[in-house]
Length: 370
Image 1 (cartoon, rainbow, N blue to C red):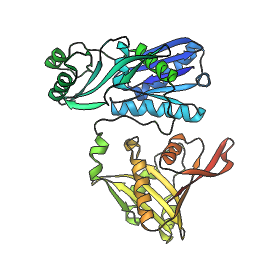
Image 2 (cartoon, helix red, strand yellow; image 1 turned 60 degrees about the horizontal axis):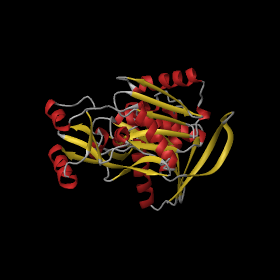
Image 3 (cartoon, rainbow, N blue to C red; image 1 turned 30 degrees about the horizontal axis):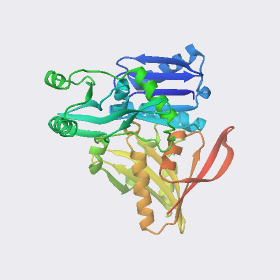
């Protein structure tokens, strides 16, 4: 199978491609993934005469690692796979490291420094099936204190392991001495891991693939401080701030439209906010047993942090408790991030208005039964 694989879980951007047995790679050290991923990918595709339609499978490293980097790479792969209806291969960072030791004859332990005296780690064994060498996990990905990790290795494997340590630009001298060799992610490992998972049919899809986070992000750390509250006209300034962000898929509501909506007794708007700032909104129109979602907006600087999902979860819980039976919404068929969000929340397509927004852009009507 032809594949495109991306790794943005560390400080380097890695791209590996295989078309008709021809393998090509690209790497950019110390990369700002948000700025460099697409130019690097575009250059690699053009130089080798490939295009996205050539690929049967899209592969991505899902973590653990840089929260922002993982979200960027995974979002790109999810978008490609969704648009082209292709399967996804998900590789975790620890197994990516371990694929550099595919021929090891003893357990392989991958270690990534998580900072603050913690390490991500996982143990694998190298196996072969139908001529395909692959790694089988002996443990789940773990986050441990260093002293607990070393004790775990000693008690479970008598220290008889092949140890791989990824310093991730964070190592201390004592930590490096303890864990020996330091090593970053390798393009060959990205290729080998993708090939093995394809050969073993270890696929997921664009909707179900998710990041692997073993520690909470800053957004999750702050989640306890988030409030989901009903908006009023007194929140107009914050609502207009959310509306006027020049979103590609949306025309902002005007101040007049918002004021008129609040005058409608069937209209409700809810905000998700911290003590200092409004981060998003979701608005609905109520009918006797159902509701229609009108707007879902997240502040740009707070996107890719799960706030859209949080808004939906809070709304669904509230409406279910109030006896609402169904929720409807409408979305542009090319608005892939929104489609993925709604599908993940359980919404199903129940209708379509062809060329509703413009030629080739349909309005998809979706429904969630409560």
